Length: 166
Image 1 (cartoon, rainbow, N blue to C red):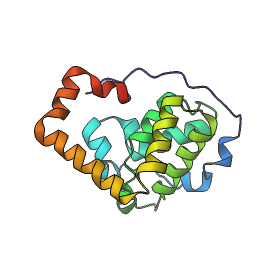
Image 2: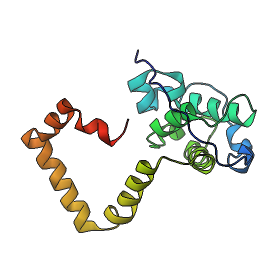
Image 3: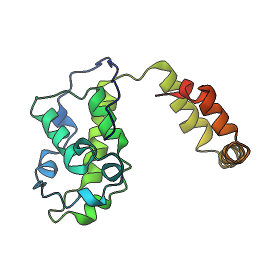
Image 4: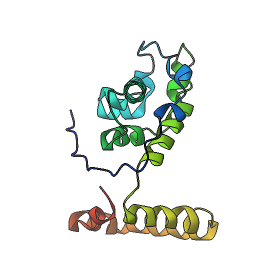
């Protein structure tokens, strides 16, 4: 089973109530039956309860009840979700998991400030890359070239990819 990665401390920038974000009625629809578990790709790969839809709902509930805070560990588990919503089709209770994930992530983004390097990277991607089809095509061509020629493997071996994040 994979070990948990150490988490970093994140600055809290607001004291807004989690109830401003997460819809309790939607969250309470979960009966914790576990039918979602075999449909979740992150749970399938990692085998960690907190990386399953049920585990993520548990974390959201824990924040709402004041037993935990939307901290770096919360961020880790919320952002590992692919939001594929496969769990929604398996859920007999009709939990709108995708909506709850969007609410949980919005809450996290509201209460924390990302480091400057992450903010700059997000701005670059969301404002300069994704909206420009030609740039996006060139970027993917470059990435494909790196994979085919072995540059990607070399970058990993030299530790260059670690400079870009976790």
